[in-house]
Picture (cartoon, rainbow, N blue to C red):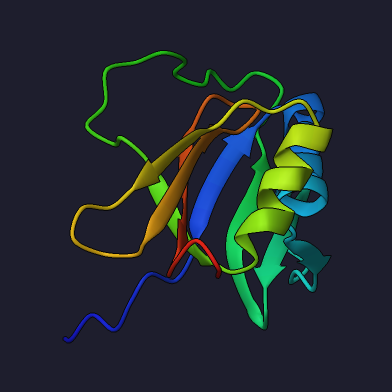
Length: 129
């Protein structure tokens, strides 16, 4: 087997948080809701270009989700464009972010938290990207 790349990220939560996640990723970060196969549980697939990168799946009513557990996952990252527009969207939605310039490159990173508390890195090739 040869790994070709990241296929998707799956986030599982109760319905209210699931809807907040969908709104954050679509309204703030520019993903779009798209086709999702008829799985038995409720959910959304969120697309960047033609790829469903984020799968949101509703947790069962009696399902316990581990909150604030110790984990080695620090964040997940997306390759992005239109830095100024993304910053304007974050500001318009009142979302705090941290901006980092990657040493020895022109790359710019924005770090935000989604409504579930996941750290998300947004990568831009340059400040003009």
